[in-house]
Length: 213
Image (cartoon, rainbow, N blue to C red; front, side, top):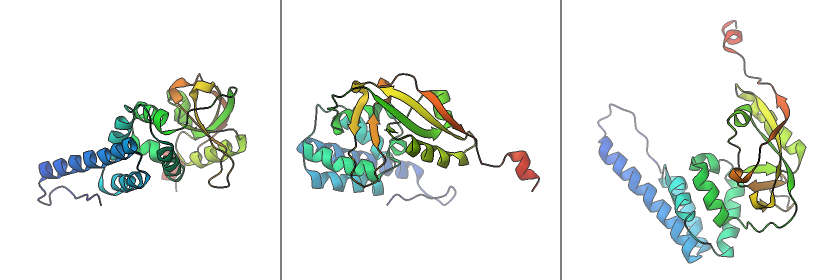
């Protein structure tokens, strides 16, 4: 468990920071080691370590995996379930380039089909920054639903559309009825420019409107 304390409580912050860094490194090493050995159970244990004992463990783990030449199919199978169930994994990693490199190792990356027309529901800020996410979908309505959820943010929601070349496609999820969203995982650094298909205004009250209540 990650312990957080408030300033002024007599905590030895240097010691706490050192312990936190050690926990991060230990959890990341466990993840990378499991990938190298092909031990699926060890990988699941490492995921628990990262989630429950570290703060920066995911970033360090992805940086380590990105340097590997490959992993066994069993590791890819386990990681796919981790990816599906961990909807905030990209945000927890906090380093898109490290995650992109790691996903090229952990995802099949064997797509040989034609370019794919994809959609993504996101905050409007994503298009302005052109820092696109990893998860897209072949289904416009699914992207619209995700964009609708982002209307609670000040920038509002947006539906992006792009044509992903085969080399950008890391995974095409099969329809399995399990978080089935027509998901296609891509390397965002291999995508071209995405167009705006739909804009959804923010539903968050403005500061002026809130002050009138």
